[in-house]
Length: 595
Image (tube, rainbow, N blue to C red):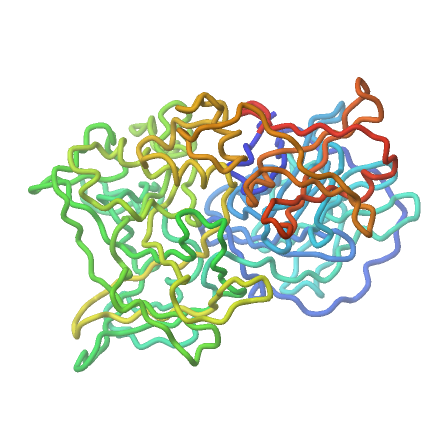
């Protein structure tokens, strides 16, 4: 089994994938009814790259969401597709486990309001009623169907004859997973889906660019940033589209399908511009890493020094940055809530600057064996999984921090980020939502000077991070972050996880123990804890409920509440945990192994 840690998932869940067949049960079901129109063009979140496409519909019955998947060559199996989508979309969680008959579709969840995902699959615990969350249990299970058609309403759905590991989509196929009660003969045919929200800009509102430059495709600014370039054959010095070279800070994205150049035909007064829209409000969320709210990717790159050149095909441990010079073409960034009233980052930061894009994590212990597998003369020994384009690089550092370091060291110090330039909307005069958070939905980028050719690759919404990760980023230097774990002993003798939960600095004095400051039941009979924890520490602990002190434990996820009149942190537990008010509760801070 593969366990994806919560720190990489953005939610407090255990995500297990395996690669065997899924057991499907035969049902007698009614014919699929006619449905409203939903076409591939209605999908917002496309994952992967290539000319072949398939659409995944996950139906929690009755709510269904749709994602798009792209690939070239041979398609991966459904298990791998689910794994990829769950990795790319931090709000979607897929749970598969191994059974006697192969991989079992245990459940799927979706963090609908983007607050981190208050669900725990193993025991079926769900704290936030807004989340979509259903699992295999009793008479309820997930069924796999598929079909082809130009639109959802035209699909003739059929049962899959193989399991998730044997199911390989064909181009244009629709794949549906629906949660049903087989005893009541619920239909397995999926409901009409809505588009799953994408963390990337998904619509070009307006653009003023010169399409004659060869880099005038404005749609290149939509979706995820480019993570690979074609390999340049050192013999023919020609690009080979069949071999991907990872985008790295000294070899940026350069294809016309990946970046749009903000140049106009006249360039008399200003450079070109592009206005992009998100499909949701981008929030000034206090849980965002470094307080940044969105990221712009261009094709700036850092010089190795002199005439030295390197690419993602070279051993990154041999490429040394001897220069702090960045090749950048800055663009002015403005944001808006309605596309009418704009607020500019007049003093920067600017688009198409630091930090250059990094397409893959440097992971020589777990290199992706599929990379360059089609070429006998090439072997990937360095690059692992894709980097996270919703995680910014520490804005306190610049290119000078990497002078004298190798590309391998630089990649590790990105700490999983794909790079890009981060922006904080907190200081702008924007209206706030009902929770007091400022927000935007439009981004406009304009080349600063006539003739400038600012390049834009993508714009992403920063994903809220687990509170422990943000505590580490706040209290440790950027080059120490990868080594700090929950069990790390701090200068004050406490493990890092406890310091983070208490809101302590690593060297802060402590009393050696803490006590529950309040325990009560609210009007809905939810148990409410008052703890000396940081308000944002809700994802750092769980509460175990027992009928007797030595009885079996049921783990419950806390939900953060407003602080009390004294400013103390309050957390609620699921109402069903109060069915026996004489139960025993124990607070647990999971260590690294349990994450």
